[in-house]
Length: 225
Length: 410
Image (cartoon, rainbow over all chains, first blue to last red; front, side):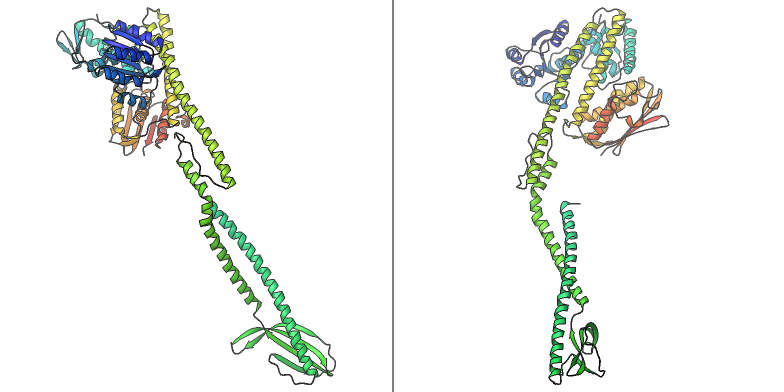
């Protein structure tokens, strides 16, 4: 997947490039509106991650350039402004998704994948790991052809882990992904624990391997091997 | 009381007092002048009669009574008197003015009584009071007319400006334009109001910009810190470092939530919220409950839900925040295990959960940063603010170890 990141903040840009580079994507960057227009009009991208506030212009104005070039480019908008207005404005202009700063790169990764899967027609629906196959279209899991029943939340958790394999994910990243940002209270990480425990048991029952490890004090890490 | 009514009333009382004094003066003057004139006239008649008597004529005048006095010695006297004489024609006693003069004429003492009829003073008084009452009535009528047409026109610029100020929103792009007036006071008022409007607009814009700045300027460093802390999490850390990092992350999340909550509160109180739309609050509630259902189960709480289809006029984002804040509140502050009652029916929304009494006064429940041990302390302040925005009445009560929030929707 070829992705263009348009973001003026160098640290965030570095974080995104670093993480998505390891995801096997071809990543490019633009830190100004001017450079973004240049890139968008010269090259084709599968997906563009666009910060609305750029030092030399609004990211919203870039959208027509993207749409003129190709209708198939996925577009995810980033903004510091959490108002419905901006959200509606973004969708009206043809954004596929919307993420408010600060965000977790794992969440952005999940959104990128979702948008990419929606946009591309010849998309591969199945993700495999250690004998398991997760069908992202049917939302089902199987182990060597045998069906593994998952609850909705367990499926969401597994997909989130799978997309962000080999990364330590904090509990609040997971909570935000499953319950949204309204999920306000850290002591309800218990709920994550319950879901995770069930998921781990189900996976281990079939393969005999615990794919998820607890990282002391920091969260969880998923191993696809 | 309207200003016009008030001035009219003052005018009425003042007119009344003036007219009473004027009527009194008029009566007194009339009485004095008319009395003097009648006395003069009676004197003259009396003098004429004595003259005729002196010439030895037989005097026969109506309203005159002449009497020869037998006694030889009389003091010459003259006296006036009010008297009542019966008038057979009108069949009533009438007022007369009577002059009695005793005088020595041609060696004979005569007593002459001269009468003249007059309208009684009480009649004068009645007439005067009647006329003045009519004048008072006329004054009031004319005054009312002047108020209604004249003053109304006079106050017109003021009333127009009042209506403009009332309908003017600080959010409006346009400045307030005042109706000009040639009255000094109104001119001055217009200038002062225009200045105040300008100041308010400046402050509003500043506040708005401040919010936008805070939103952007704080979110970016928050994003950077969050991203960097997540990156540090990926490194091989000792347990000690992991705990330090965890604490830093917890505080950062807290900071992020406080920032987000304060911005939301400011936005609502500054009216920087989109216009309300008709939305199904029952759908919002059901959707949020579905999201949180597992958290209730995980926390050993049983949900007792009663939802009927309810539509309200509100911003969908705010409605969702209101509901999720109240759900989170019941979730976090419930005794476990326990039963949580949540309902929405007939324009009425409630959340009830078991739990220990508040560690602070009940009236402070919606105050910012008044909180239990958990949360950032903005959730219920936001709930209250949203309710106020849509004129929904929210109340809190605590009975039988159960917390209860009731919201009456309009």
